Amino acid sequence: MPKPDAKINAFLKNFDLSDIEIDLYTGLLETGPTTVLELSKHVDIKRTTAHVNIENLIQKGFVAQTQKGARRKILAEPPEKLETILNNKKQKIKELEQTLPDVIDQINQTTIESTTKTSVRYYEGEEGFRKVSDRSIEKADKEICFISNLDEWYKIYSEEYDKKHYIPVRLEKDIRLKILTFETPLTRNLRKKDAEFKRETRFLPEGTKPFSTTTMIYDKEVSIMISSSPYLSVIIESKEIHDTFESLYLELEKISH
Image 1 (spheres, rainbow, N blue to C red):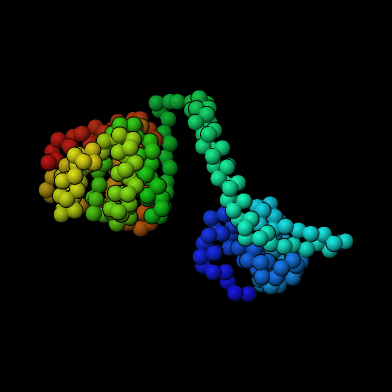
Image 2 (image 1 turned 180 degrees about the vertical axis):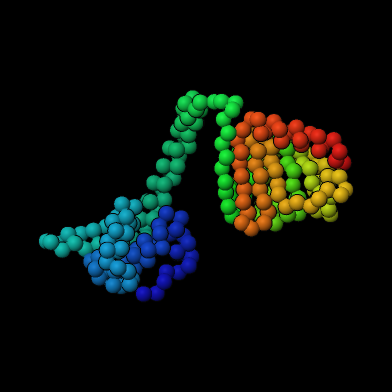
């Protein structure tokens, strides 16, 4: 069976369909109404695997079934049904958005706060690196203290993504950014726009040993990211550790320019 067009495949993945489900659905569009056994042969998938995934497709609204006596046949819903499925997803998202504030309040009310409580989360990979970076603008209240080799950080986060996502969101939330970094052509150009982007960039003292990590200090958390494979990132949620790193930042700030 020919594989579905890459554009169709990518589009269907947005409906939370697995590769096997996509093969079965597109195969069923080709065969028309048929049995699970016949479809499994057509797409070259084991019958038991096809059966389980067809049931999933029925639940998701992509496949219908008909019964003639003891013989069951399955058929693909017409492509136009995708619009109905998409509208249902939109409605569910709208409902989630409406209930989210109440759910957050309830979770916060049931959370036991403790000044000695420490939570540590680890992430690997470039996606985890960006996720941890973005967390600072999600959690910060008024200010983020940022210690980084920006030339290394931008290799993963990218200057373009910073301009189109991080900076606009931070400005919208009125969060100030304080940066300690190495002086390079890149960072000298960045500092020229500090006033426009509500940030303060200072350069680390000459002779500071090069590093590829980024440390972000905000609210009651500290995030540490390594800009080299496997791109390990850590979020430490602890008031004590936050206060310690903040004190170190302030001391380092005094000797930066």
